[in-house]
Length: 263
Image (cartoon, rainbow, N blue to C red; front, side, top):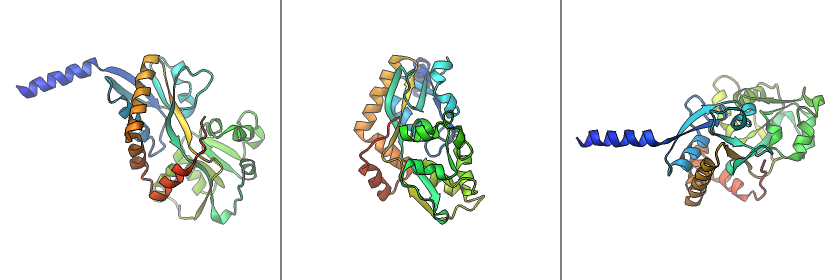
């Protein structure tokens, strides 16, 4: 009898839960794993909503659709990991961060002291990277304004394809978060040689932050309060370190970075 009562209470709770359809990007392990609808971004979003009566429904889409999903898709209530634009209305800052590097193979002798040096090499990045890597990068690699560089600079929707392109020698430099690069280096080693020594060029110092955008202000307020709560409790840092499996050296490196690159 108690078990039946528990099931009824649980069913009533689910029935009264507010459904929140949240759009995340496509595969960028360990931050987003589309096949299983898991990853650090999903876990942080869920943790921020855990004290509320929201029930999160997860969908995935490419980055170039993600940025305008709230404005263009009525069935989407929120989007994760987007940069703030003039069209953003119910925006929550600093949802997730990445530490991006320009990475090359040591044997190629790539010399990168500043962002304009990238013009001397073939470069591959993730989709819409030019929007979040700072004004100087945007000046040189905006896809519409600098068509001259299209043959040397490419942005791919799939970060697996981005990493494969680098290891197959089709790009001399890859722009990518260090954790994502390490993850794909291990995964791709099954099908290709990823053993070359690499050089991490720290052209983008600090954390590159992304936020979350909501259709309704009341949803934004609930999420923002929950995000602040898990940050102050230490749960946010714990989720990040557990998911990315940062070693002590990497954790210290990130903590020592004082300059934030916020889209």
